[in-house]
Length: 419
Image (cartoon, rainbow, N blue to C red; front, side, top):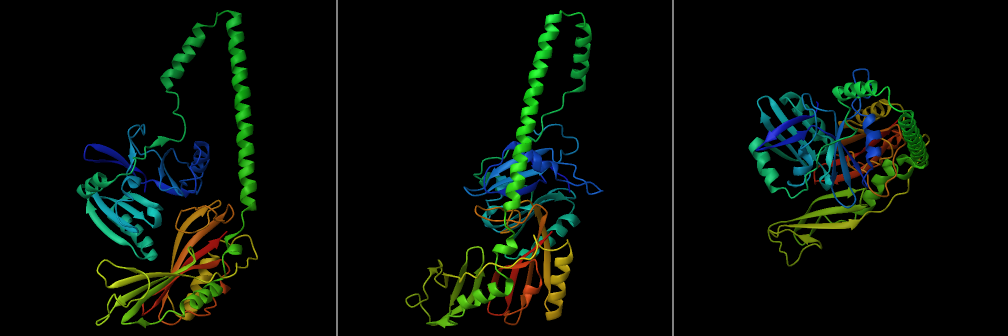
């Protein structure tokens, strides 16, 4: 699905960008190099991005969107990227599908921190958009929204985000007519004085020297980035083994009572990102807020939200750089889940240089990520029995990041790291 320009009200917007997240603003030269590796052709060779837009999400997260130039559109002048304008208007995480024309729908998927998923900004027919939503549905906890182009007008009017302008990644090419005119002038000036030619030659030499200096600086910068990437530790070495992480979760949550003064434990969730356990209590008949569990009380007085620290397990073990060959880890996880009778959902997320997986496409300060060829795959599954000592350690590239219990079943999610 390629980028397209759509009209909403009296303004035009660009949709269908591919988004990446960083922990600081990137230089245009860095974005240009990144853009060169994107949008593979039928043979799998990258064609490269032509346009981009930058979105400051927060003090810790900056997103950049990339796309190919839409057919029939010569310049990005005056264009605004739609997704960053409306991403923070609705409660996260949210997923929206909007009909913008006959047979044409726009799709947006926004997760934690109001970050747009890498493929969470798409435009296409109904079948392709619904297929994309199905891929993302495995993340869970979505607020699903459907609407029309009029609803997008309302979203835009509610937004207080600074518009993200669409800009070219590379300088515009010189129009052919200008080149032809320049050749004609050069021919006409063939009899110019020697000193004029000499000065032009000096200027050309000066520009050549500057170009060489820039090229050397860019090569040195690229080499420095490659050396930093090699020094980045594997996520498999710094994240705990799955069974050890689950044991730490159970150790932290086993002291939670089933009920306190008529307040019933509704759910709890261990989160490896924050190393905490979130607990939800619900008031039953006869219970009052005068005697309730510690925590934040909901506005209706029927729910208490509490948080407690989670025991921090030891780092994991890794025998190779990152994971195994593409597909091997997925097959190993599927074989493991089928052997114990659970249904695992796998979702490919991104190939990234130094991004440690916290949410799709996001990079945070202090994260250590996989090496330059690492691919991240999200997995999730539900169980009706206590997920203790599952043997998930046998899947080398697997790491668990979240466990939740709703009183009936356990839901576990994490990431696979492949080469």
